[in-house]
Length: 109
Image 1 (cartoon, helix red, strand yellow):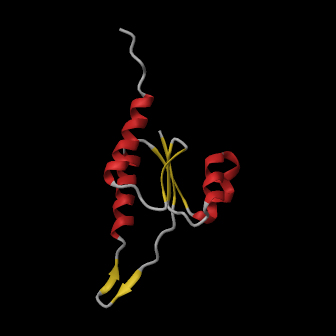
Image 2 (tube, one colour; image 1 turned 90 degrees about the horizontal axis):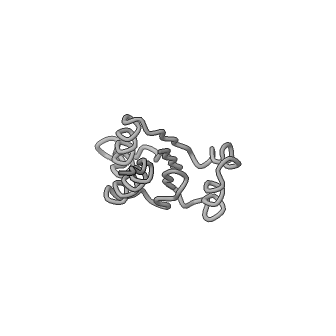
Image 3 (cartoon, helix red, strand yellow; image 1 turned 180 degrees about the vertical axis):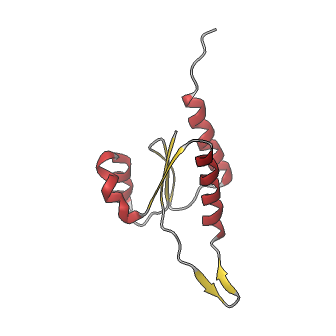
């Protein structure tokens, strides 16, 4: 399984009591870290880095052409799982589960 995420790291927001974290971004990054720790390849790209890898991946080219501002884009095995927002926990679990089931060898009993 291979996960590619094209996202912009949000700038720090300074509030009256200090730095205000982007909870949605942090939660998704934690999910990515957990998946990566289990041995899955996770590729994190900034939108400006797409040009370096776009030739090797037509799905990334399609994402950039469709709407260059529709980030983040999350791909699992080069299939778009979510674009324009981070997937919910349920969407993420379904996408990873479907890929893991697809990678399971077929048993012939």
